[in-house]
Image (cartoon, rainbow, N blue to C red; front, side, top):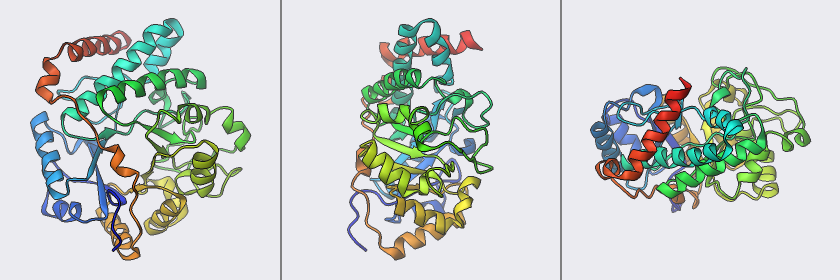
Length: 346
């Protein structure tokens, strides 16, 4: 096997509150480079339990990247003992009335989310969502800051700056924009019939204008037939020609979960993995299906693909442990401000 420059190419999930023998076996494999926690609430019972789980994961391989979807609103995997975060659309609603206040609170929320996640030993949350708001969307909707690209850019930039201040890298999703289609890519294939010129003027604007702030991008499983015949996460046109060359992005690209139904349009899980890696994904996610994860892992091992030297940059740099964080004035004020925003909008 070639010397891997940084973590391996596969991110997977683990099944419970502690690692099983099978989990330890898989996490010790050099082609596994990351773990995503919190799916379906099965990895979190308390702060202490989460910290122990993270420590056990790192004991398998110290370089593993450990991630979570801690966006806020309905996509907040760790809830008990963590600050309740609003859906990002709350900031967009506030922005229309009090833009300066909304920008300040978006920065505070980015810092608060990141500081709490980092204090438990994880590296990053897959955030923020840069999709545009569409009320009818079955999967994005209020996860998006706003329907207007300029508002998304303003609020997302502040949120990212807050994340960076806490020591966390930012991942913009779902490139090139998932918010303007109704269908949920977890269960069906969304198709966006617009051409590239239309997308560049709308959904792509937040990605283009935030490109210098982003450390990573996650493309969505959405088909844009006027641009390419493959979903974005498996498309060289989207990832190489547009994201890398046209927009100038040089950070990490994570696939979205390759077990999602929309990804099935590309074939079986091995075909999806091959396409995603060939398109330029630095790390691919295969979650909620251990047998399929093993199939992909065997292929990665046998094909001797080189590792990505971009991935180590995603490691978190926490400033404070959990107890020190909670004792500080900044956390207490941030929690009060964000909790007030959540409460006033309930």
